[in-house]
Image 1 (spheres, rainbow, N blue to C red):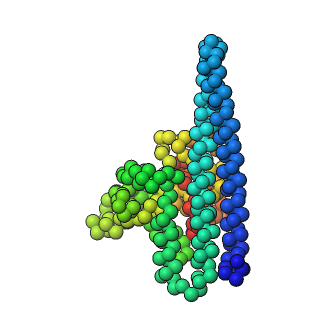
Image 2: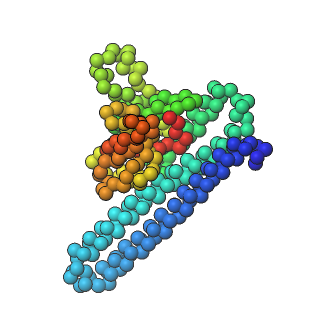
Length: 282
């Protein structure tokens, strides 16, 4: 392995494998928790079927407990999907480091960029579902605001809030519009320049503003991609504290956002915070 990758490549691959194992353990625990919740739900179902007269006496308590269990089951399923997606990203990273590290010095910059774009295109940032389901999800985003990677070079990625104009199921490309303030005052030519055609992997749907339960929950210390207050740009940030409810704002520490030597906490609505893409550069 060392002769193929070199010292740096081995270290990088080792770090990826360690992260992979951590995520696998997390996924295993989530599935165990799901099994336990399912057992509790089944117990209540059997009780309702076998002893309906007892249920009538304490119907409110049973319904409340059943609802709580179903909410837990839903959250665990969402976390399982999120963790599975993260595992796929880590696996892609391990494969990519093993294939491209050795000839990296010999390949021209243009070829590197071409390979990276192909890899990105092959890995959609949508829920873990069949390709047909992913295409349907993408088509349903027409008219919605999403996070989009509109610019990328060898040093950094730039993400902005854009509006989906169209999704082509054949080419698997989005046509999006950058809606920055002052757009109405610009010429038609300038507006046209703000349109982009992007692959699915360059788009991340935002959580639904009116449905906090559908949003992924990021714990304290988790790195995320979030809209910086007062702008339409997204930057990497760290969750500063736990939230009591999923509808609460996140309090985030944005990278390189120092004031008097400190990173101030910025409040950002939950529907403007998404998972940090694998390999994000800023």
